[in-house]
Amino acid sequence: MKEVFILDYLRLPSGKKNGKYRQSPPEEFTAYLLSGFVKRHPYLSELIDRIFLATAVGTGGNMARYISLATDVPVEVPAVTIDAQCVGSYEAINTGYAYIRSGIVDIVIVGGFESNSLTPERKFNRQDPRRTPVPYSYADFAPNSFGENSLVSTAQLMAKEFSISKAEMVDWSILSNERAFKSTAEGLLREIILPYRNDNRDETLKEINVLERFIKRPSLIDASTSCLFDDGAGVLLLASQNGCEKLQLNPQFKILNTCSVGVQPSRTPIAFLDAIEKNNLQLKMHTNDIDLFEINESFALKPLLLNKIHNVPAEKINHLGGNLAFGHPFGASGAINLMHLLVSLQKSKKELGVVAASAAGGIGSSITVQQIN
Image 1 (tube, rainbow, N blue to C red):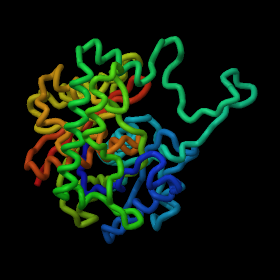
Image 2: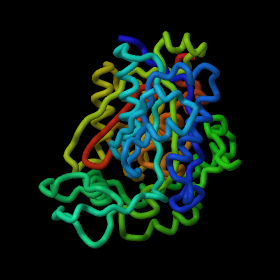
Image 3: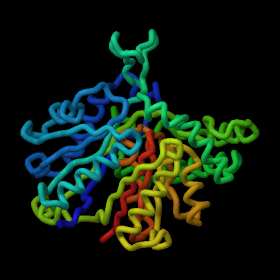
């Protein structure tokens, strides 16, 4: 089995829903990103074997292929779209990893994109018993037989089960934003952001004093303890050792393992913990062996679960700030989370990192990486 390396990574600045990307189709801004990414490396356009991109609320069809065709990537390169909701780009990365590890290909671009600003309004067929006069934008995640499985309700259930308070979650949201403001001010993300229309500003950071107002409100899950629906895109370059040599690039990071699991939809928020545990088991590692974690912050609950259940110090989780600050463009989030983890490992000179997320319907994914330079 071949080793799989991460050679490069790039994202767009994050945008609020109905913000800077409100009139930019996701195919357009993602093609812009992919073009800029390919141009960073002289031989890449001629050597790409596959492209795997994720989206959760796109217009349908094989959007990755459409995006690829809008760039200088040769038409002979297959591009495939993946929908696994919030772990979509994890599954894109997992797929690229598997293709390289098995020896099928040597060089793959993986990642994801999302536009919540331009989410299509859909209607069921006239013959479909689910049809209503009102269009829908987001799909159901599990059959009714599984009971209540909406993301907000499952987050509330898990917060109560593990005794995580509203104040703790608001405090984490504040911490996430403080870290994001700091990492942005220090320019730690500058090299991995491709400016869009001369703008490299992440639009999603929240004002701290606004978050503090929510602490005394009774609802556990609200705007202060959950992420916004956002727009964005991110891509990474994966390669085998042979691919590294073809591209004449020295690898910075190696993917040690990837893992996905299923849980009951009503327990979706803790799915990422099961994925981390299974990943550790396969690698014969322990949570304490991991230097840094990047946990998808669709809810402030999630990093607090890792902190509380596995006693992982807050200092080891989401160093640069998480999705509560930088936003959660569903299909792109995993790719962006992984990039932030890689930057954190590089800046702190640490070796081992894990990125993990849970997705609607009860899916958990995690990826373990190692810094080798």
